[in-house]
Image 1 (tube, rainbow, N blue to C red):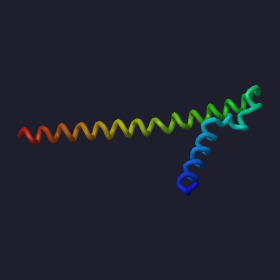
Image 2 (cartoon, rainbow, N blue to C red):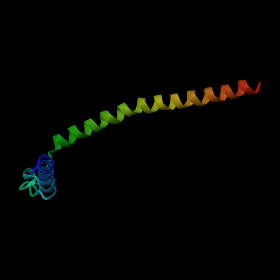
Image 3 (tube, rainbow, N blue to C red):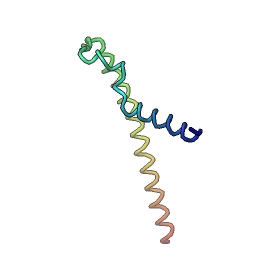
Image 4 (cartoon, one colour):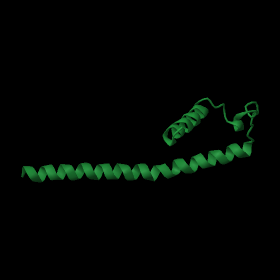
Length: 83
């Protein structure tokens, strides 16, 4: 067997092994466990969501200002061209 055929055989074997492989070992046995969050965990997650929402408000205001500025600049440019 020459080197090219050996490389082809090894690549084919690796590809076949990857395609026909079974599920990951970490996924077995943990599917029947139910996680119940306590009220403190839910309160913490609610606080995190509130922080994200409050940080989005200035971003939305800034985006509105940028769009308004761009539109007004285009309007001013059109008025100057017509004069």
